[in-house]
View 1 (tube, rainbow, N blue to C red):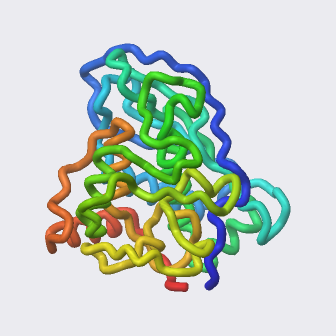
View 2: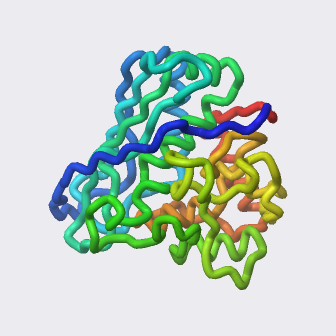
Length: 280
């Protein structure tokens, strides 16, 4: 199938200021999803996506008052099939007394009901939901705290620069994609609102290979989950996992990229989430 923009409208971030209380006893990480207008089978896809990110993310580097994120997932009639898919992003944030990071505490994922049915029947809904949930957790949406009106926390990306400089994701880019001299991870500047500045970079509107190939999966970077266009078989790279670390999350210990153990680890995560996708 031809590539398509993941979301046709800008991701909306409505920041509600939540001051977090110190609570050193909290451990773990939990994504809690509430539903409106979604079928049982569609809800199962959201639960699988939550299980995937819970598999990778184990908690927070800073001390926060709640160890969970609440996401409101909804289906609604918007403009019919093939137009605006919907929107997704954090709607509230929290932080700990250390003041190093802001984290999503609440989020919203809204989809056109007509597009949901098509994505589900085409075997693509799992990828779309997992991708958009990644945005709720901060990928592309909380890369710059000043960019959402809260300076003083993480500053990983300057708008319109196309250069993500977070240390963990950059190290992963250098290793997994054999770019040892790179000083940044390339970020998408095309596609307009909702795509530019919030995704890893592709070329030609997602229609061509980037030339950067994962030494773990053997796939081109265009197929990474958090790029801006949907097409081909998807994988979660160490670059995306590194960005979560840059955003202040703690992650499950991951074997070294390039090892067969790591490949097995990624396969296990996919099995946990029951993600399935047809090639385009």
